[in-house]
Image: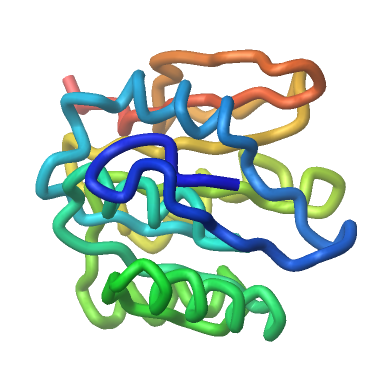
Length: 182
């Protein structure tokens, strides 16, 4: 995998070998960031289920102010650290279960402009991720949640509005914003 845009365009991103992770492909990442083009500069980014860190790294390459990576897998966390180091990037890391990490971020009063999530498709639903993010109030008022998920998965919530959905074979990426009070 490679960084698809920004000041690190073309630089290599490594991932954990084998089938334990499902890295976001270059094509999907490029599509996501083409959509987010005007929302990245100076954004505070959270990358949940970070895997290789590709989404947060892509955001940093394209001008995000900061990124925090949540990953519970030790091998994945080592890969993220190595990727950040090889690219000369600094970021915060949390090696925890995402629910525990989100709770901790709430107690610290942290909020994010862009929240990326790529949960294990068969274990954690996109709806569960959205509800956890909202429960812990991690999304800035004008922030976006971007979730990669199995095609056809739905988020039924009166607390968010789906802005966009893009399909890539058996994978979809959905963009959500907090529903504004009337």
